[in-house]
Length: 115
Length: 114
Image 1 (cartoon, rainbow over the protein chains, first blue to last red):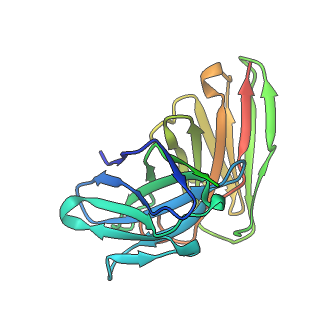
Image 2 (tube, rainbow over the protein chains, first blue to last red):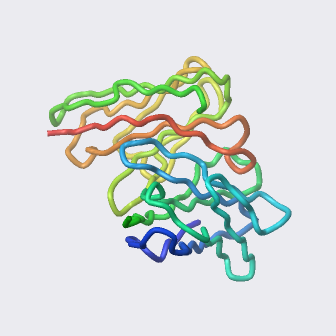
C-alpha cells in the first residue's frame, strides 16, 4: 500500500526565514506528486505538482519542490517566507498508471510564520 | 477556482440519524472523490466515482455509501451516523484519472455527530 510521510508536524519560523518541508513516499511504481496548501478555514489549494520531466518544479507564491527518485522524496522549499504563508501543507501521491485512484496524503505540516 | 460546491457547509446531527452530503460540480469532470479530514490524519479517501453510476471504495469506506446519478452530482450518505464520523468532508474533482490530472477540492462540509 502506498503511504506518505511528512516529517515535521509543526514548524514555526520567523518572516524572511527559509523553509523546507520534508515529504517521503512509499509506492511500488511510478508516481505523480503534489503539494497542497490549506489556509485557515479554507479548502485545499494546489501549490505545485510533479508528473514528469524536470524534477525541480515551481509553483505558486514562490514555492518550489524537488523530486529525488532515489530517495523517494518530494521536499517543498521557499527561500523567504511571509506571514501570509501560515497554513497547513499537505504532500500527496498517486500512481501515475492512469487508474481512478484517489490521492494518498501525508498527515500535514502546520506552518506558523511569526512577524 | 474550480466550480465545486458542497452542501450543507455545516451540519450537526445526532448519533443514529442518516445524513447525506452533496457535491455539485459545473466542470463536467468525469472523476469525483470524497475525502474526510481529521487532525493528525491528513485527508483520507472514502469513495470515488469514475463515471455516472460507477463508484468504488477508498481507504475508509466503512459506514459510508455514495451515489452518482448525474455527472455533476456526487452524494455521500452516512446511513446511521456515529460520533467517529465527526469530521470535515471534502469533495474533489478531476478531469482525468487521478494519476494523470490534478484534483481540485471543494470548500468542505463540517459535520458534527453528537
